[in-house]
Image (tube, rainbow, N blue to C red):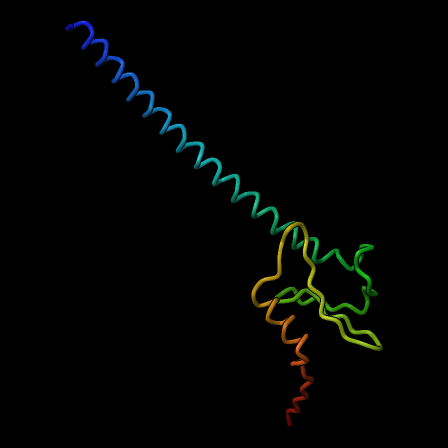
Length: 121
């Protein structure tokens, strides 16, 4: 009887020790995952910024690059053509419009855009 209690206690201690090491290793893996995810997001942002600047020189950009004026934020380009002015936002991968960009798009779609001339004397 005493021997089986000893074996049971050893088995319980071994199980607790094993759970501790698994938990500890899981935390290390979780921290490594967070670091990798952060690095991936940073590289996606940098790639997006490079893509924004190079976009006028790709086949995907339907405008003359000389007509495009880069703003960067909150929208990427304003394209000034003879017949129209276009607001252009460049996206890559699975990126989406920000709330501010969606609001700008909505204002344009509702014809809530104006030209204002300010004269300073």
